[in-house]
Amino acid sequence: MPRSIWNGMISFGLVNIPVGLYPATRDNDLHFHLLHKKDCGRIRQQRVCEECGQVVDYDELVKGYEYEKGEYISVTTEELEKAQPEASELITIHSFVDPEKIDPIYYERPYYLMPDRKSDKVYSLLREALNQSNRVGIATFVLRTKEYLAALRPCGNALVLDTMHFADEIREAEGMPEGKAEIKTDELKLTQQLIDSMEQPAFDAEKFPDTYSQAVQKMIEQKLEGKKVSGGKTPPRRATNVLDLMSRLKASLEETEGKEKTPRKKSKSASKSTSKSRVKKSTKQKEALRKAA
Image (cartoon, rainbow, N blue to C red; front, side, top):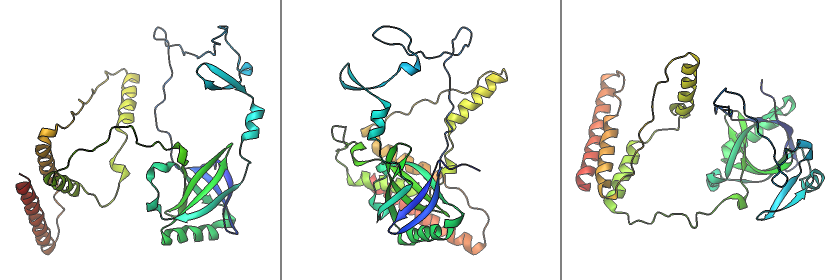
């Protein structure tokens, strides 16, 4: 059973709910060390002073802030502790909002908030109230030595706490390349048609495995077994030329039509109704292609 990384209480109004905080994600990345190519010896990093060129022990290090290029001011651990937020065991909910009113760019990392044995009833009550009202709680809390902004939302039988970026951490798109090209009506209609043809009833994460990690893991296993490493790089796709945009859209739409899977055997009545709907859909798509041409 996983251990909580923080224990405290959800607080809103005069209600307190004892909870534990658990990571909702895991790091599946493959991590590598630097080795000496000649003998595969592990390479260790040394802390070398730029002024005197000597290797410095860890207990001789202090933190420093670069206030100008090449100019630093040292800061002690005691001085940093004075600036740290006051330790607290509360996740304080300040307000409740519609989740659709929150730009996803603010979300950072998810955690599970799970109840202890004594708070199951009030925990379940908050979860169901949020679920039925379609609201999330906006809260603040202190984890270790840092204060976080967070959103509490229901997720199945649990509550999820998403840490969030503060407003001053979000960069504006100003100064970056912008999309201001003129859009033609037939191009827009055909693009919408392609989006509709690729629509799925729900997002299924299982359909999108981490193929890169799997390929690297396979390569490592082949090397350990003394086998020749197989596979190769996939050639990069070229950007779509504006001149052949319509032809690309049409070809993409035709390709998605070809990928439609044949359903399993059904009753005759169901088969007839499915066939009619397919004919209608195919006729509409062909009509859209004809108009766009």
